[in-house]
Image (cartoon, rainbow, N blue to C red; front, side, top):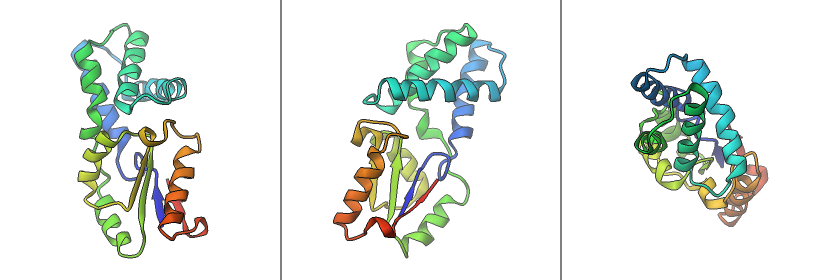
Length: 172
């Protein structure tokens, strides 16, 4: 089996997040670079995931946007927070992801272990065009990586499917 950390590996989260943050910043008249927005995003995301491990990913994204808004002096509206929370559905797949997954599916069980919620992943999965054998999300385990819950659950479920941990390769 191959396990995948979906975002950053199969889905181009950086391009997706930058586009969503850029649109918000332009609408608010905020003059910051994409690099600054992404750095602020990374710091806030990790903090919120650690502080609220049972929060769904759209809630994490909304909280991150609030933090970024505070940093740049442009508090986002509730509607902007909700829209940013839903932006995962617009994040693009890397150009070679769907084709590579279709090929790999012929030989391996494919598994997602991701810091996402099931609804958000549903949109990404449509972009990837493959039926994964198993999907383990932060929503499923109530924690965000680097906590080991995703991997513990995935390995246990793969064992039930007849795939021992010595037959699993993680791709990130």
